[in-house]
Amino acid sequence: MVNLEHILVLEKNEQVSSKVHVLTFATEGVPQSKPGQFFELKSPYFLRRPIGVMQQSNNKISFGIRLVGKGTSALCGLSPGDRLSALGPLGRGFDLRHVSQPGDIVIVGGGSGIFPLLYLADQMRTSGLIQGLNQIYGFRSAEECFLEVEMCQHKNNMTLCSDSGGLDFHGHAVAALEAFLAEASAKPSAIFSCGPEAMMKSVVEVGKRENIPVQVSLETRMGCGIGLCRGCVVDLKDDSREAGFRRVRCCKEGPVFPGDKVIWS
Amino acid sequence: METKVKIGDVVLSCPVLPASGCFGYGIELAQHYDLSALGGIVSKAVTLEERLGNDMPRIAETPSGMLNAIGLENPGVEFFLDVLLAQIKRFNLPIIVNLAGNEPTDYVELAEKMQDPQIVALELNLSCPNVKSGCMSIGTNPQEIERVVSAVRRATEKPIWVKLTPNVTDITEMALAAEAAGADAISLINTLLAMVVDVKTRRPLLKNNTGGLSGPAVMPVALRMVSECYRVIDIPIIGMGGIASVEDALAFLMAGASAVQIGSSAMQNPGLLFSMKDEMCTMAHDLGFSSLSEITGCLEYWN
Ligand SMILES: Cc1cc2nc3c(=O)[nH]c(=O)nc-3n(C[C@H](O)[C@H](O)[C@H](O)COP(=O)(O)OP(=O)(O)OC[C@H]3O[C@@H](n4cnc5c(N)ncnc54)[C@H](O)[C@@H]3O)c2cc1C
Ligand SMILES: Cc1cc2nc3c(=O)[nH]c(=O)nc-3n(C[C@H](O)[C@H](O)[C@H](O)COP(=O)(O)O)c2cc1C
Ligand code: FES
Image (tube, rainbow over all chains, first blue to last red; front, side, top):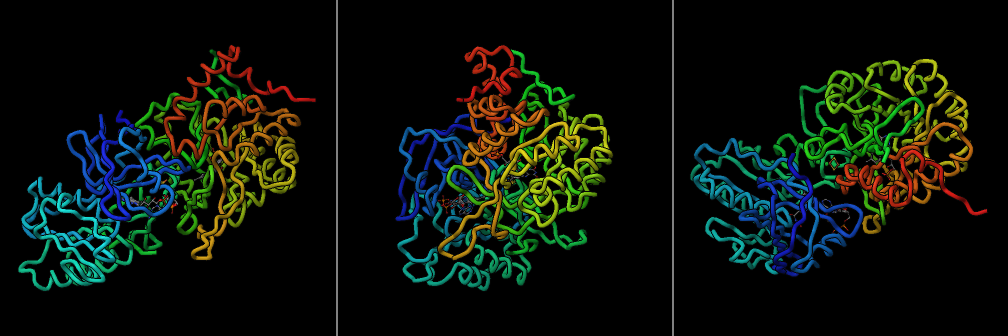
């Protein structure tokens, strides 16, 4: 039987912007997670906090955490040596089965959705699955950009966008995606997206229009993260059902779903 | 340490059960834990028809607990019997099926369908606060409780556990009504009707506006109710509400419970369910008990 609960020991807590910390833990016996999978991290409050994997290799695991409220503040306040209970890896990650055909891949992220995508980009690169990997990441302002050189070893083919200018692209990540597609010599074979719901929704629209499959990673409020409570459901279009949709658990069947199937709230 | 307990005619290998709706059907945790450390499996509520439950969000955190407004989402009794039951049976544990209906007749119809010998008891959910009809609207009225329980009593030979709601002025009235109508045990408590407000949006956080409060926050209320019921009824009590440690579980036994269920805290810390039996034995031994069953009702009240 595979252990579900792991005790992680914090090695490093780096503040990479005013609102973002990267926590790196030593892991022993933690199964290798797939990009898009997440862990339920213990907090001092009643519920655990679901956080996607940003990097995992050589007995280390990193999470990028955006300060949102009290739970993420507590996590970002951990010190080296502190121990933290984590359940995982949880959920199903991005589906990479269909990306082996030649063609470019585009990754579009915003906010805390960027962290799991960094892991995806990293895994794709090392797997040699793809020809071209293009990453587009959006920030509200240049000051909020937390992607340091160190965090993105392969800065080429990465477009950093800011709504207020000061980065590679002045404007929204979806506008950068449109600009990229207009100039691309070949149609990308897939788009992967994670971030604010409005952004993912627009990315799915673009994908539909351009006939490119989009996978999105969703966030919902979770009671357990491990499939027990059905607190986290998402509706997916399903013509085989009388109602026209089926209700699935974000934590178990997700958090990554085919974008064209998602019925947005 | 003898860990066996008897709930009426039902013998459980130990008094530790998962709480309905907080354990799925056991399938997820079976991949990570040895379920044989449990006294049985308690299913999520089963209804006659498939239910989608309430709109999202359905979960909110509270100080020392949580609200849920799932609204009894489940695939319906047909799917339960045709597909899920076979999977649950593979765990080789006694199965307790939690039944919920809109109408009194729903409970009868559901009970009649529960024929499998591995189903050792039916837990009638007269207490879910998150649905518009049935459940809590029955469980807050002693006449209705009596009506439903006696109708189910006539329809099945299986032991009936009646799950009660704390959202009443006098829990003993409800427990006595269930007992009079032929219940074999009572389960208490279900969640407390509650609300969380998001001041930024000026709206309740849950789409259902209200939800059921569970977790450590409710434990003292639950313990008081178990203790009150134990003093007036003769049928066994399955105690629950906020259990998060071995001390909590023993407190329920002392107050009068013959077995306990663990819900919200087991969702945060699933290992708790599976270490509970051993921890109970160790602690019971240290306290001078030689069996877990003798702890039931040993609480000594002040005069
Ligand atoms: C699958 C998944 C992966 C995630 N990955 C990351 C990540 O890699 N990095 C990151 O910074 N954040 C991530 N999030 C979001 C993160 O879980 C929330 O920001 C965090 O739970 C907020 O907790 P809090 O106590 O700081 O905020 P509060 O607002 O105080 O939290 C109150 C409650 O609401 C819940 N909640 C609030 N916002 C969210 C949200 N957006 N999603 C789910 N639950 C929420 C909390 O878990 C808590 O139960 C992810 C969410 C999901 C579902
Ligand atoms: C997410 C969730 C779902 C629940 N679903 C059910 C249910 O289907 N039927 C039922 O009788 N009780 C249900 N309950 C109530 C629990 O079984 C239990 O009575 C209550 O949560 C108190 O115990 P706890 O504090 O240990 O969670 C649910 C509770 C939660 C938190
Ligand atoms: S959060 Fe409990 S089932 Fe998904």
